[in-house]
Image (tube, rainbow, N blue to C red; front, side):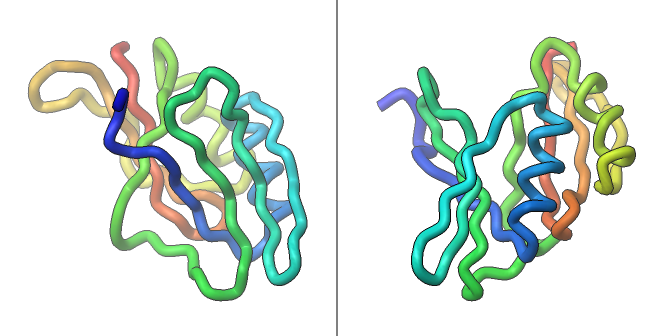
Length: 122
């Protein structure tokens, strides 16, 4: 096992808006899949240990409370963070050094109201 986390779901209320937001800030393509009773946006997963999806199914609600998922911010998370507000999100913690000086983190709200983070070494 390479990681304890294998899959994460980010709840959304507007799948198209959420897909557009994450594609814009992460510079990735997200595949939209529709199934009876649910719509998903599947993050690219080739060569990935952890898989992620945006999920609209009527049972889950976006939230700024609870578990926080941190995305890999690449070499410098500021590149992604600079795209958050111009794409409809809100920065709630700017780029900040980890207390152990082991890199940096930032927190933001996505277009759906979920709190997420970024992490990078620089």
